[in-house]
Length: 162
Image: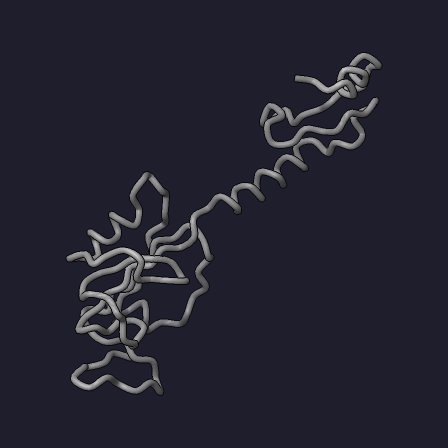
């Protein structure tokens, strides 16, 4: 339903313009006589890029817990042993699962599109590479060994990997 202002502007020849690439769904200009306030496809592309960033899913991490210890984090975990998945804020939201494959399948349920990143022993020994905060499912597989950074203390009864 149009407002009185919209009706008047259209009657007087004012017009609204939308991007031809998206059919005007992403960006539509205000009413003007010459359309000079609308940047067209450039503005629309910026709006679409912003919306794409806002709708991406945060990274999900698949982590193993053994004997009450999160192997990758080298810290106690108050959850059952097995594979768990979650996000940066809480990696132990869902689980336990028997294998990382089961945890990964559950983490990517609902048709969510994630890029798989697998951090294994060889990958963890290399230099740190930045990981964008969205769109990745990260499986951290330490091979059942406790992962200890240089300078960290080792938990009793564990054989660490550095």
